[in-house]
Image (cartoon, rainbow, N blue to C red; front, top):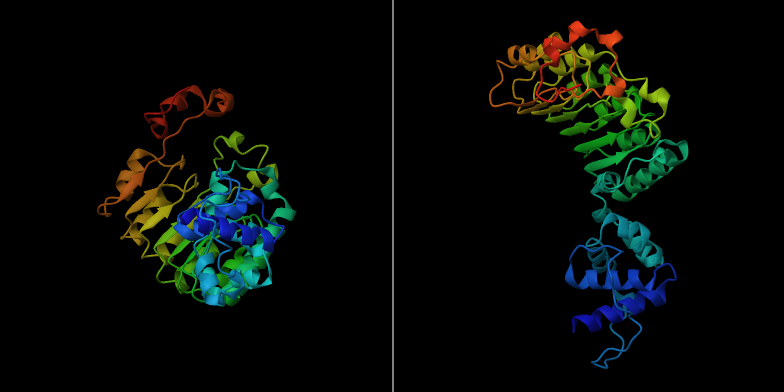
Length: 352
């Protein structure tokens, strides 16, 4: 019976739109019946063959109410809705814009599953990200509570501040054109924020952290990671060189802003920050509820610095800075042989 339903639905999908292939139509039909995650690449049978049961066409899907159709579409991934069902017909497009489908906008699985691309850092890709995010904001009708994307700009984030008062999670990694201007607006209008990820956003300064702290008392998670400036070779050819060279230098200023303005933090990531022992002390004294602290790549800190600064923290898990400096980037004239035994380099993974 299940195969009969799949075939009927798939036939209807193919009849309704030339935008779907036979494989996509069958995948969607099977997904509607089973309510199981699917991918467009799965192997499927040809739906053109007659079924063994010999039954006629299934129910006319054009008679589905908007609510029923929206419920069906909610079982699809964001990618499937944008690349398939949204293109079927006007009624399906309208159903895809239902606010109930847009309480969350998460593109992280897409970015995480693909290798970094230089195309992502182009103005054209940024415009597409802005356009997509703005559409989601309009369709959400104020219900959007989670945004996880990359490579957007102030343009779309100012719109977020204006139209998303219920936003709780904002993750905007690798956004070279997001500045203090839009983050200030986010701070003033999205006061329910509990998680913020501004990693690799080099135009955002410590001033934004102060405003976030003053206006978002529920913030528990902050991720402010920098790119690996110790060995930037992993980013070369993808990230523009001028952006790699723009790595923020004011580690202690950001640390002071965090310690003074974000007392309720429980999770903090500041990979490759250039903060000193003084800056770490300010964070640990100002954020007594920390449960997790990621200091990977913070080369200005020693093991003793970390131990002394974190004495007042209870049950905190600290990811300490372990350094591996490849031969290709190690220069004796820069560090000097005497630096080989400096305490900051005494880690289990350091090797030359």
